Image (tube, rainbow, N blue to C red):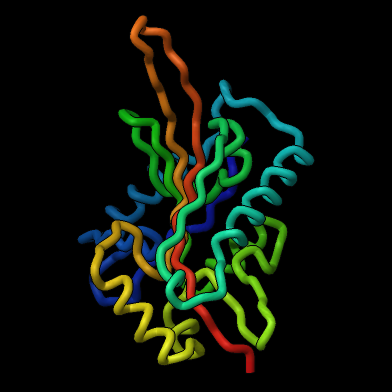
Length: 215
């Protein structure tokens, strides 16, 4: 079974071909096409994956949304980069995010999905079966949202909160960009003093949040 992956969008810049998901630039359309072909292979359902019940996956998605909402506190000092970690099998990850995987390492067996831009929130809403997956409402006409589109969020964000937030977060740099939701799956292996092995997998969701006032 192969998940349908939408064509990789091409940057409108003349003679520059860019993957608008990972921002990698290629010298030719052929290079971008090869990049797209590699990504498609990442999203092919492997024979060793378990075919998990749809109801089970839907329940897992509800848990992810709950964990994301627990990272949406209503205070400007808490605005910034947030992360969610939950135990997850490789088959479980693929059943949830197959079709949106943009990176896979043969060496480390790490998967990565990148969501950012005008349609990223709607894509995640479809995945999670919840239009409010990244928004939490509070009394006083306030709301906390996951940042998926910098242009839209920054226009509505309270200027004072934005100034305070940047002051808080400017002291540290992050590998995760504001405006992107990065979802990773990583295997974990541990050994004790007698070389006994324990292994499993974990799903990590990294995202930035912002505070807005509902007008």
